[in-house]
Amino acid sequence: MKDAGGGIRGGLGATRCYSGIGMKKPDIAKRMARQAGVSEAEAADRLDRVVHQILRNLRQGKEASLPGLGKFRPRPDGKVAFERQGGKRRG
Image 1 (cartoon, helix red, strand yellow):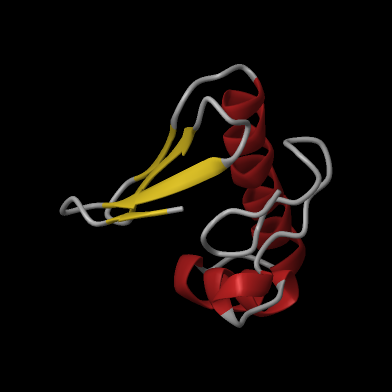
Image 2: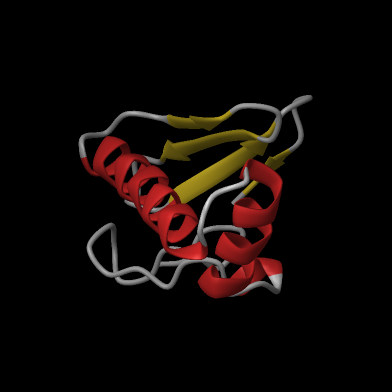
């Protein structure tokens, strides 16, 4: 299965995160490190924790929020929908 951003495949077990947004994890971690004033390794760890928490919530049938962006919601058919903040739904 695939979410609107291309991030979750094969149900909620296997992941291919970040591919749909045009950035790879190291790129995101590098940007986070600069903005937060931490090492790239620390930023990558923080990013991993966020992604794993999102996946954990979805596996448990709960929604997962990204403040300022929107929410991931598990659908009854096993797919994941992303609802952008402001009400525009994808997936």
